[in-house]
Length: 168
Image 1: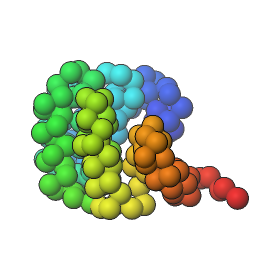
Image 2: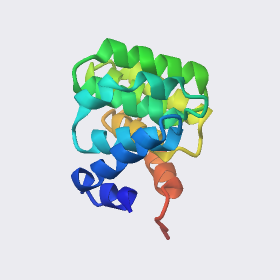
Image 3: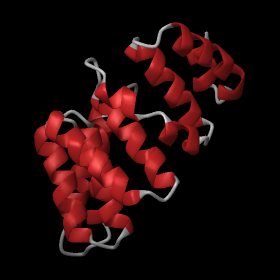
């Protein structure tokens, strides 16, 4: 029920339940992750930053936890720490496209388009079913006359891979 509330943008209503579950189950990865995810969705990044280290040390940690923490650290303007966390995540999960996507987005925001496309492509080669790297790479490639055809190929691939949509 709490997860549904977060998905509907009502994380503030779900947060007490996540806090209770996390307190009652301090060693449960999912309880800890969902609590921090809910905080992140509410824009309460400072609170995520204060309590993420235990989550990343958990034996059941997943790549999305590293992504979540990277986003939260970026939002509180701790980009160096975020980059360190994402680099650790890539080392632990070298096939996690979501982590390459975050690193590529930082390169893009720094106007380092070569590094950005390189990182999107690394994400694509490591996790070819993760459609968002194709989509974001296509947006970058479509800005260039020289690589516009590749941008179209990447956009089409993203559309075909995107979950829940059927294109004919």
